[in-house]
Image (tube, rainbow, N blue to C red; front, side, top):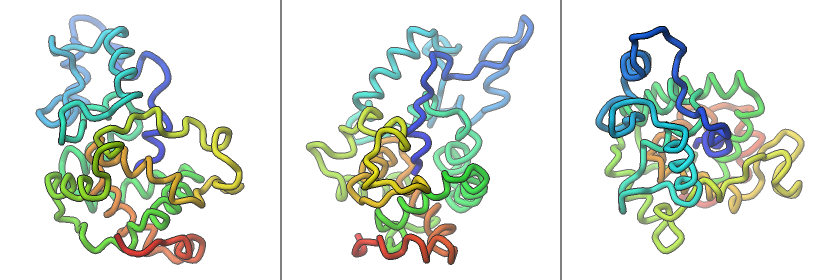
Length: 236
C-alpha cells in the first residue's frame, strides 16, 4: 500500500543512499549500476545534472512531498519513491512501479512484510478494510493508465488523490493513532484511517500494485481472512 513507505519518509537528509566508493567512480556509475530502475525514464532519482541531489535539494523535495505528492496534474509521481524508505526500492518499486510485474511484486512484498511483523498485520488490515479483497476490476494485467482512471473515480478532487501529501499520514502508528483505531497487534480497525494510504498509493503510482498485492496474498490466507475479513466493506 504501502503503509511503510508513507510512515517512513526517510527522516534524515541522506534519503538517497549513495554507496561509499573511492574516486573516480561517480554517483551515477555506482548508484545506477545497483539500481538501474531508479535511473530510467519512469523513475529517475538523479538531479538535473545526473548526480546525487544535494542535501538542500533533498530537503526541498521532501518538504514539497510532505504537502503534496503529485507534481504533474493528473499523473502519479513515481519519483517520490526516491525519497521514501529505500528498503522498498528492491520490492514494489522495482517489480511493480518500474517493471509492471504486479504478481512478482506481490510475492516479494508479502515475504518482506511477514518477516517484518507486524508490518503484515498493517497491510492485511488495510487490504480488507479498503475492500481490495473484493476488487474485481484490478488484475495482474492492469496498467498505470487504468489505475489512474480508477483513482480519479475513487478519489476525485478537491481533496482527492492529486492533493494528498505525506504529511497526512501518521508518522508513528503506535504513538500517534488513537487506540480505538489500532489494537495491540498494530493493525487498523477503521476504514477512515486507511483511506490516506490508498490515496498515497494513487499519488505514488502503485494503487493497482496494492490491490494485486492484497488479492494474491492476504486475501487468500486463512489466518488473515479469519482476523480481518469481517472488516470488509461493500465492493468498490
